[in-house]
Length: 280
Length: 144
Image (cartoon, rainbow over all chains, first blue to last red; front, side, top):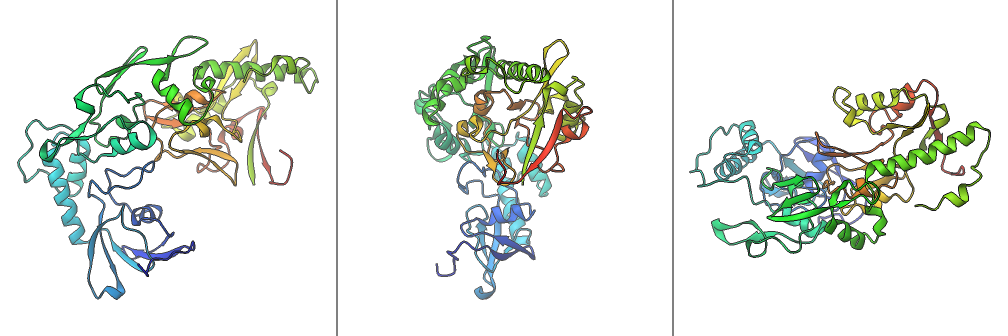
């Protein structure tokens, strides 16, 4: 790949006839996004590396030296390079995008996001036969990738062919899951659901106890398992995940209020600050 | 140039203009949940406006499993990258001052960013009637 610029200097390329600046190592999608050129995506998330599974970000790539040859590439995985000429709205790109959405609509006819995207591209109805017992999963695998990089690899794709789905080991409650809900929050179509009642949270068929505030006993928005996972992974003290937002805020406000009271009296420092400090 | 929001609780009269200014700047129709600033009542006629302190070694930054919270080195402002955030709530619990917020209606973690991208001048300070909230611009060389 002699044409890839290995230096750090930004270079320019053309997207939809517009000169766009890109940095070495960056993908076409990132450069387009920064330049304000919209490319639809479903499986892309900044917290993980691009994967190219939804195929929605297809663009046409060419160079002046390629003598008219144009390739269809996923923008999220195609590295930006000097003098690339990208088209995101050509007839061929739109045709492929319509096809992808047509297939997605056959797979997930009830997904409002897919319906909206399809309608925006002029696909009102799928031309394929709709899947029996459809769900909202487009099998983009974003949940699996997020769980792998930010949590514990508790879920993965299971089974093969058209039985393929996102699942847990042996279909049971996942033993490694920490109940952080990252999978549910990143899911583009809202396929992954969870329930939270009082101090319990249920996801993937498993129930979790929420961490409780050491001061007032109110449930925190993280699970007990998640707290111990974060303590280990981020190398933090357990006290970081032991008190609720409002207790922390009240304690801080009281400290500041006390300091302000002393300042009103013309003191720059509280007399007993040394003894009273050191809570955290 | 470092942007610094100076809070003098002894000047606060508890009018909550800062909360309103914040909610209207960062949310739709000034819904209170969108405010990143909260005025706490700590005694009779004693109030403390509470917002992110932009810590140098922030607990939110350290606790984020996907490094979605970073400090802008130029303005020394701690910022959340919403596209990177996975809403795991670690930062909300980790902040020792309770200044990280979660807006359930928009499923968004939000914190005071000193109005980065919204005029780059803290709107709360603009609307504070008693100069309890003021803005300082500090050059890198001056003592912290």
